[in-house]
Image (cartoon, rainbow, N blue to C red; front, top):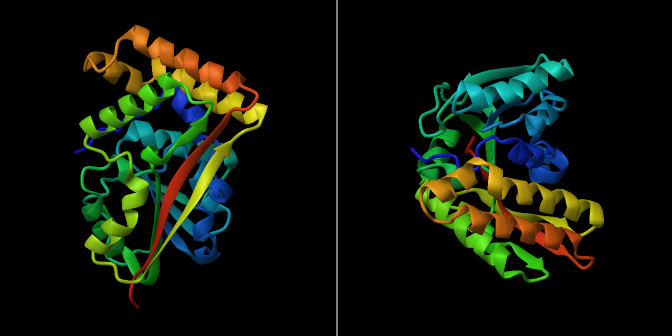
Length: 265
């Protein structure tokens, strides 16, 4: 089984807590309605999950262990939402019955799993005829930024090496269509969308988040323990993120692949 590269440090959750339907699942919105039964795989801190719960009939939120699942459970409770259920689940072998959901969704999940094709097969199995399987993943090799700082090139090299050492695929976005075809889907729509950070406020948030994350998160510990980088290397990268954030002409683009797969009626 693949290991989750990011972990759940505050600097990671600072990023994940900003996600909702509008910035992370807009391609799925036309398929959501008040009677929809939705399975949200890899719910994380639950911000997308609770947004789904406001527009669909019922949501099942899953995570790989109780510690991770407690984050989305706590958010749902704080919002007073009663139409969300929670389950520990492995996407490679879901415990749910066949055809149990109308929509099965995974955001930034397939890049972290050991067998994304098997994951998509399982997602299809638990989707009712006429329903949809939806996945969206970043594509790290497609990240582009300005100013061009060599330390950020090194950051990308290190992140990609760590993700692959954990059994994942950091360039998942470009592979979603291929994985869906291998999983047996023959009715799908492949699209893309981006996150872009260019205002002073956006740069301060994105650059500051990564400046902390590269020295404090599970990724940082892995890079040092596996001797991919030293603490000094990571501090230099952190300083570069701060310089990028301070640059008046700083700009950053994060591309995502999206796949919407229809299950035959």
